[in-house]
Length: 149
Image (cartoon, rainbow, N blue to C red):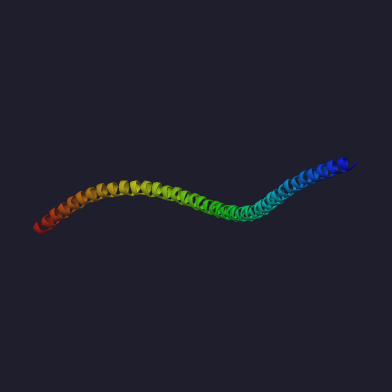
């Protein structure tokens, strides 16, 4: 019995050493796991912060892009209004040009008529001058004849 008790003590001591060694290994694993978990938590926290920054940056970019779209739409609308105004002005200018062309054609036609009348007046004037000269000659002859008488 003493012998068995002695063996049990030795076995117990050996098991206690193994148990202590196993506890030390488990404690080391626990510490390593806790460090790894703490590191992972820190990484998750950092990723969450990065995600928040990215979300905020995306929101700001979206807001800026929406403002740009609104500004460009306003510019486009303004340009369309200006184009419509210019188209109206162009239509009015075309109409005025057409009116001026009509007036020019009318004036040209009138000028041609006046040139024709002037030419006829010149011919009439020349004919009248010849008649006048002939009448003066007749009168002069009559005067001379009258004076001789």
